[in-house]
Amino acid sequence: MHKELGSQRLVALFVGGWVLFSFPLLGLWDREASVWGIPVFPAVLFLLWLALIVALAWLVDRPSLRDEDMPSTAPPPPPPG
Image 1 (cartoon, helix red, strand yellow):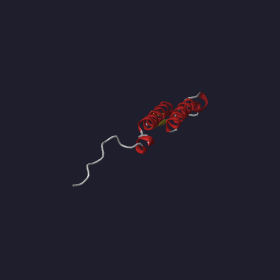
Image 2 (cartoon, helix red, strand yellow; image 1 turned 120 degrees about the vertical axis):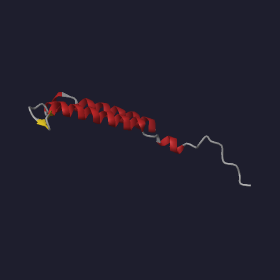
Image 3 (cartoon, rainbow, N blue to C red; image 1 turned 30 degrees about the vertical axis):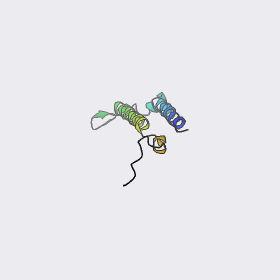
Image 4 (cartoon, one colour; image 1 turned 90 degrees about the vertical axis):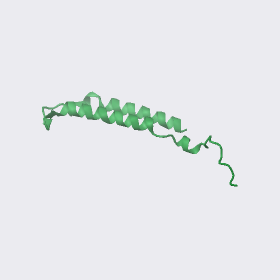
């Protein structure tokens, strides 16, 4: 079941990225303005792209809950004595 949830999250991230990079939302940032000398539109594009990469890395690299639930394959410790 956890594998299905991970797949759903990846699909949701894809759809979210698609929506973020669609014309109506990017049109909000297409202005002749700059922040600290950096034009707003390229800065927003870069920050959205960076946020998607960070979210993808976090989703893919997080440890699975199944790994914690599964018993270890290591042999049990020897009895004391």
